[in-house]
Image (tube, rainbow, N blue to C red; front, side, top):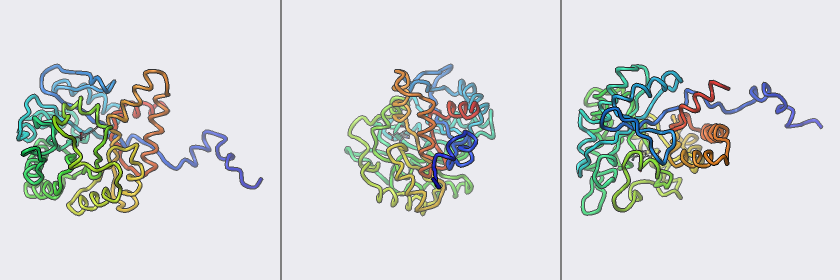
Amino acid sequence: MLIRMRRLRQKPALRRLVRETHLTLDDLIYPVFVVEGHGVVQPVQAMPGVNRYSVDTLPRLLDRVVELGVPGIILFGVPDTKDDRATAAYDPDGVVQRAVATVKACYPDLLVITDVCLCAYTDHGHCGLVEKGVILNDPSVELLARTALSHARAGADMVAPSDMMDGRIGAIRELLDAEGYVHLPIMSYAAKYASAFYGPFREAAGSAPQFGDRRTYQLDPANVAEALREVALDLEEGADIVMVKPALAYLDVIRQVKETFGVPVAAYNVSGEYSLVKAAAARGWVDERALVLEMLTGMKRAGADIILTYFALDVARWLKEA
Ligand code: PBG
């Protein structure tokens, strides 16, 4: 037989030579939850292996992140006080702002990204201000921009708005520029879907909406043309990196965003995707390591340049062992 596809599959070294997609340490961002208090390392029940850290216990985690060579983290704040104006989100002395300063003091070269949203800071748990049951857009954007600026002032290397309000990228870009942060990049959660895969995160961040759902601002899982319009708009408004979220059920969206725009694309391997694997692995139903590496390789194959994942530290370890 002239052509036998199996010839190049016979030896590990040959398979390495013809491998088309490579998952590397350079691709990974590790999400970290920071809470108020002292000496706190609190497990998140729905996400085995994930903890919430107070600012003083953060350095121990950072030691591991740096030792494993993961290039960056994304911080999520879990404040003690919530109100209808999300005041703690843009407090210069807020939990994220202090966490950023701590990271930068310990490890100046570790990339610190901050999630910019209001949902963990509002008493109703929505990503924007609420009036008579309606999630307001423009007044929310103003507060989101203030929040992003407070993160920049604390020393963040990049801000990542995850709220899905219209016009927020432009507003954040304008305010950052006006305040002298012209080189601070924005990673936009551009194609963020109204997904059931965020369930475990809402326990971790205490950000579940107290009424209704997020379908008046996040994308309908059935839509892809609309996602491309969101991405186009965010790029026009100045986004430097665009994200698709969740990842696993949206690989086609990742692919289309990459092919259409050719810009750096991030994929968020979200909490529910993590917990599903953990739950099955705990029962011995799947091989966790093989499954995770396969999932993340699939995201890269689809076109993701960057993967935000709660598995980042495990993956870093596995890649080192390999
Ligand atoms: C905040 C935000 C969410 C996630 C990241 N930023 C939750 C949501 O929109 O409800 C989800 C992350 C995850 O599930 O891992 N807006």
